[in-house]
Image (cartoon, rainbow, N blue to C red; front, side, top):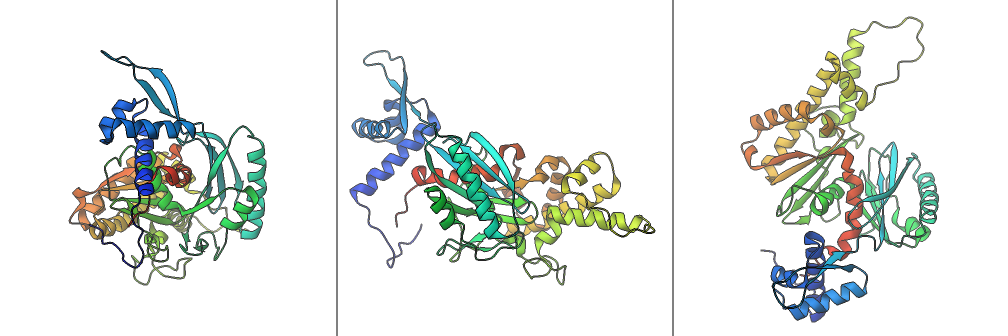
Length: 404
């Protein structure tokens, strides 16, 4: 039961009730389409007259369309309602240290166009390049009306200033992306941490979270991020910094992290950690080259997975070491938070048959409640980060309104 905050509350008015009922209808149509007005009344418990008024309003606003008529044993034949998924387009932007993905999607998070650009290390330069690319993308699709822009970032957003305040893997601090993007496009911009965006993507478009109120999304890439949902609400903390599990210490007096701390989880369980393990293992076995002025280029994480699949022992050892530390961190989260489900996002999921058994073994040895939490790897081809940016905009119309 949530206590009403008497210093910050909003009373429920008739407008509030109508808004709640409207959103319920939108979600029922989205979930059960094609669906008749009579079926909506049965599913919602609202009177048929109320459902009809809301349906007509949604049709007038072009959120819903009427389709074919159904069969009835007697009386008027029902007309089925569908979500008009082509009503508007949503622009999604997934910013990562190496490359940034841009996409246009419909209301079902089906991507209509995608492209990418390098992520410049200088934020001002990057914003200029991004706004230019956005302008060209919007002009190339004049047939689409846009509802807004969602942006996922490998860092934390200050809930008050809406600035990116913590992104060690980008090397940016106190960056305002919202203002220039809104000025350049005329569209409302929603910013969110990448892990929170992935949690939202699973809630809105996933297969595993129907009826699940407590979940944790863990993104494993250059670093590690966490998106925590408790009782159906994303947990951000008072400053928006909640969920930075990748920067909790798991190795006392460990290696220095980009955040300035030592022994952080992501230093030992991220893609970058696997690359470091592999490079270290190989360098110990390889004799120094004579007359060599520059070292070989380090492999990518994808290279290490490919080598491991080919049976390269050093690559296998590096991935197993990464998997061990990934399991160790997850065990702490399971013991402390007891989520119903943990969603794993990242390239590791492409090789989960290797990672999964090691992660499960470590969790079972370190957590006394492992059986209560399911660990589910996402499909990288589903683009969970990008889909999360679509959910950021979508929830403005489909999410529950904030009422004390």
